[in-house]
Length: 70
Image (cartoon, rainbow, N blue to C red):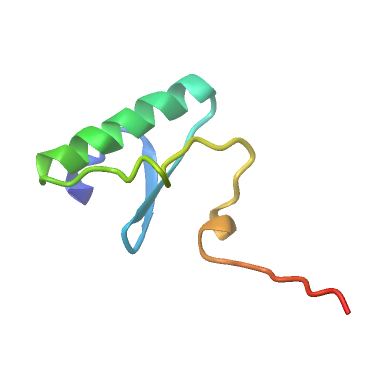
């Protein structure tokens, strides 16, 4: 599957894929490109978890900060 993602800049963390694009339109294209690659190996994105975000950082994918108030 990873070999078929030659178009957009894509980073994979375990089973999560993140594409970094310059415009929202390119983000849509990247989303569908990744979805098609997944379909090629009989997988599909979880539409409840999949989304296009603005101003996301790669750290958001694996770094969680919890702030507790006293």
